[in-house]
Length: 538
Image 1 (cartoon, one colour):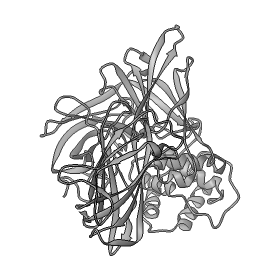
Image 2 (cartoon, one colour; image 1 turned 135 degrees about the horizontal axis):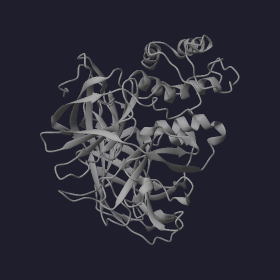
Image 3 (cartoon, helix red, strand yellow; image 1 turned 45 degrees about the vertical axis):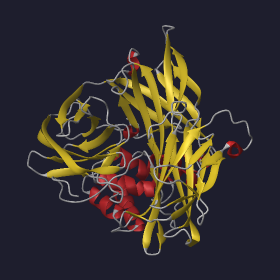
Image 4 (cartoon, one colour; image 1 turned 90 degrees about the vertical axis):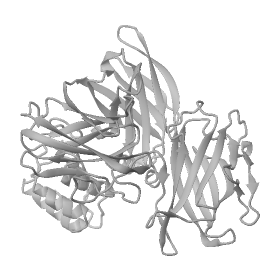
């Protein structure tokens, strides 16, 4: 598939189901994709769910058939279910009926299995439209569920693989927890935290700055974080509570570290009675936080969240209709203008006005001179063309160089986990005027100076693409800091480490910065880390 306005290809990723990293097997790159139905599940609201596990070759997007699976389901370190299953076409569907009131010390002892046992493969299966059934303490509580899948055989019920192929995937089930906050006027306001990871505790409200904070169990071990795609929490407040109105800007913190502004999503559309603020903390952001806080943080077993209102903003906006009846609303703070990195908010609606979750899209801008820039089309073609917005709302930071009339070309490419057969494009001209504020600085504090020339982005792009090595990149940055070409916030320098390697999250930051997706300050935080670790000496 090609996008009608794009001249080069790149692709993107989202959350909803989970695909495991591929494994080389008989000339193929095989993986599994695990998907829940319903995808947005809240504990206590469903009495039946489906787990779909697809085993396929990423190179051809074709399933392997006649597959024997060993499936385990874990939550918070507890084994909930383990059994063998068989499926002819490579996509296993298993019904799960959540069962509460399990008092066994080992929860798997409460789990029961139903289905026909395959005579040759030995796994549970069902004929026709039927499904094997698991009845147990699964999905009755919210949290992150680890679905471990071992492929024991493929291409024939009698064919066993020499070594089982082991995959880890994660799916989330939401859980509502209710709290009350007491305002300075002694009014009690109900607040719901919808957690997709684990139970929250230590919920507090600061009357002075209207900040909400809470804690949640979390394992900060780097090896575990590599497996986590996203941590998702929602804070739901009544629309009548003015400090959290849709025009409010927020800052978010995880373990005291200010998160990238894209982590926070305000949704005033999905509920008639509540405004919803999402924390969508990606695995890359978790790694960045862990690296900034250092090795002593790796053993932490708690994640602390804080959401702080920063005041109201006046926004510019325009609509973009599509031929399938959908609509996008594009909005940004009217104080931003030429020369700024502007946080553009993209919101997607269906033909009934409801928010479109897990929407997949791509876009690019055209300057007043007719030059195309800031192409965003994702980076995982094996999954889908486009980038996904989990909640149907996303923020993209785009540097607008000059004032004038710009064109946004926006393409809807799919929903959920796949592309549409036909893409839907919309184009809209909009005006960017003169800035009345300084560029948005999400990470360093206001008194610290960040000044990085645009031409340095070439070096960052070459390095992120592997065209120059770590040492060359680090040496170049070190020279430019010493010569005053780059000015970054001051930080204490660690002992020089000639054998150090640069973490992947710094490389990702460099790629995003070179493409205009993050600002100078966020990139500078990566440079600070290199200085602190002694990879760069100043």
